[in-house]
Length: 184
Image 1 (tube, one colour):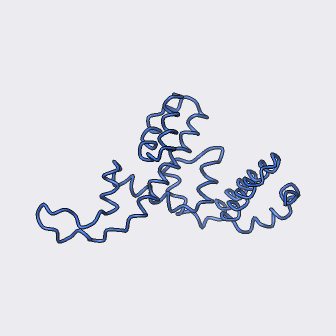
Image 2 (cartoon, rainbow, N blue to C red):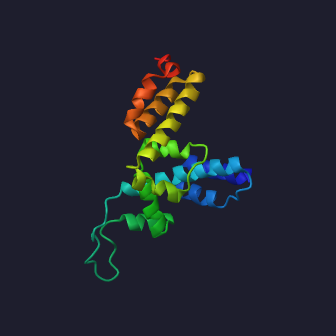
Image 3 (cartoon, rainbow, N blue to C red):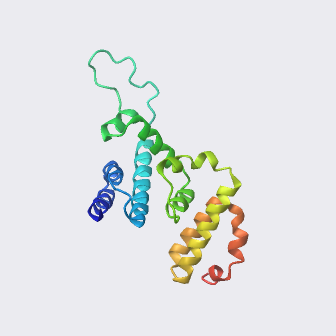
């Protein structure tokens, strides 16, 4: 189990995002903490796949009109995804996850119970849900407080920014937080 997790993490670090995604799918949920770590690696791998696919311009019929066995005029997202070993559904899902705002993505994946890829892909659908955004902001605020107690200013700044991305009104709570404001 630990070897599979180490393999998934090394694939992620080497840039083989599809491989990391596939490796995390092989893990059995024996240990809850390992499964949470695997979910986080999987989420980052899926997001990175989506970001890379977004770098390729949409096809919109670019290769229509090719005759016979002619090579495609240009590679499309669909072609790139297939070449990387992603199914059409995985490609769409990875692009949806890539579209989740970074603050929301960080809050979700670093939470105590990281969401499934399907739930991450749904984040944009409920982004206007006030309760979801406040919960995310409160979590980020708590992470900022945790890092403040360790005097880790860079992490405090990162989590404060993520909290504000989730719910701008959280600024009032942040300003009133003596622990956080004491670091600045």
